[in-house]
Length: 282
Ligand code: SAM
Image (cartoon, rainbow, N blue to C red; front, side):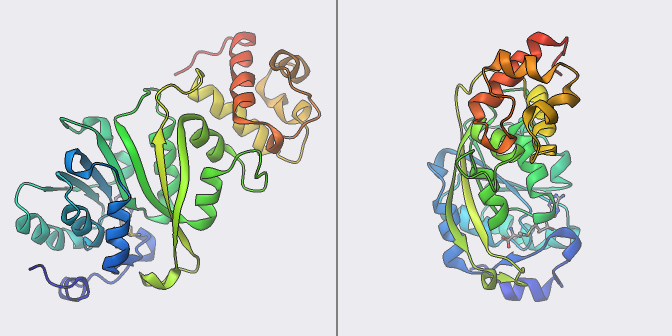
């Protein structure tokens, strides 16, 4: 039997470090609920970012995950993770490193990859964007199950029907995935407790999202939402084409503001911009 997580934390001196976004989830019901939110764990290779002392890691393996590969930056957590690897021979691989520098495409998997994680909040959106705005699509993963602060989760699932939260994150996630909030996790469930509620989000890649250059869509959404209170005829000026011509080509009223523009219309603007300028996607 593996020892209780609290014992593991005290034995290995794993005092939570704020700089690494460490809020550990020790509630076995919750870690098990997150693990069970994934489809077909038994056939999948799981990439877990930031396993920490290994609470979610244990839950994933206990729920039947065939193989878990985890990437942890904090060296102090490695001996605790090693105990789990020894307890479940051949099912857990530990990579000591920075998840921002880790490319999931380098995983040698004989089936789908799922990324499942209680993400460090300070790099959560950067990681998600790295996975979603990749030039290769469909991606190597078939499912993402990720914990974010509730406010970030709301931005991930936002559309122009929820203008307050809608922005670049919502456009990218809605364009390429079907994203939904599964459930909330109260602050007290974590050790130490963060200041805000968290939410678990599921994102399933769309097999055939509307065709569009992610690099150019990033420029368009940056321009539009960078000045979200301004009309498109003003905010799109930084794209170096006549914004009135661009809006006309995309069939949009130039007096609209970014937060009213649907994801499909952002794709239309992007494709018109691509034709009007000599932009070469990376
Ligand atoms: N999965 C554990 C749990 O649920 O209790 C810990 C989650 S904690 C919110 C985030 C974890 O990510 C910590 O273990 C932290 O050390 C790790 N981490 C922070 N920055 C990282 C990075 N750049 N690459 C990999 N892991 C990182």
